[in-house]
Image (tube, rainbow, N blue to C red; front, side):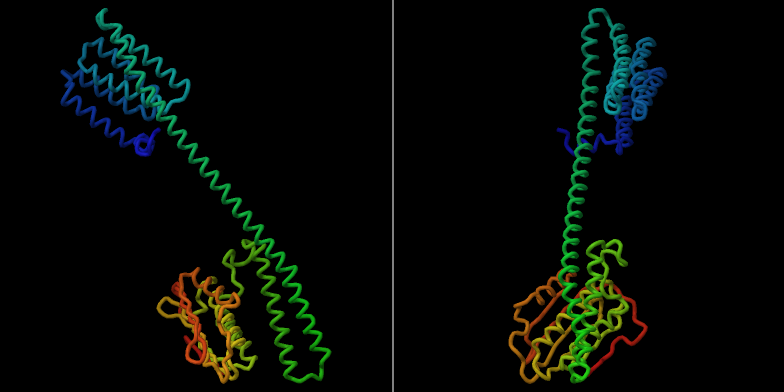
Length: 402
């Protein structure tokens, strides 16, 4: 079996290097071993070398020319027969390596004719041994060249089959992923979106059939209606992404929040938690508006999940602080509470999938996530490697309190 090293040696891309090596060997032989004894010898040897080198482009013509020069050398009585025979062998190898069918037959036939004439010029007692040696001289290069060509073709076909198999697997993987996305999108649309839409509708009806309700009840209903409507919009956009990411603005990395709107979206997440009665202080670096869509969405989801956990578990009258900033190529998010007057048990104990989901998001971006008790309260801290972000036009950070 032709190994990789041999395949590279006889590759067409290194043909020029082979020609240089052949020229050096031929000139060394003519200078040191089979030295030409006159102008005719040098002319014949150099003509044979030139024809041999041309075999890379025209192997049939080169084989015929070098074989003919062997007969010419016999006619004029030169002393470079052995170098010319070596050149015939090289020309036959190139013919078998590059030729096909009829071309190989024609070139080998012409070479056999001239080699036979050369053998006939020998003394009668030496004709048969000379023919035998010339048959070996011609047969071995032809067989070796054919073998190398066959191995090259087999290697090329194997690469083509491997490429075709890889394309098939990739196509099947993409088809499976598309089918999975379509199934998820269908369930989101038919099940989740249906129930959310029904809840929004019922809350809207309640707002109108309870005109004299307590203002606090009306405020809660308004908040539920707004949150449900926003969730429906996000669900529709997510379903569109799942069905065909390429046709949605932003492509496969499409985000549910515009990059420039990220600071405002973070503030809105904090505002929703304030409506539960918690005091939420925010410090948001406006440079986060320059984050790419993947990191921006990750920061928003971490903040939303962390604040939702605060709303569920932080004690009454708790004070929550959320800081989001970009510093030295890193996005830093910290959400911490002081526990309030009666910090509830179960904060972050991992019964749900919130912390798991946050950890997975951070891990995908090569970041770090910490979550655990801090004094009487709880602390969530995340670091995300971020690309360079442009400086914001407005102040770098701001503090909002309620």
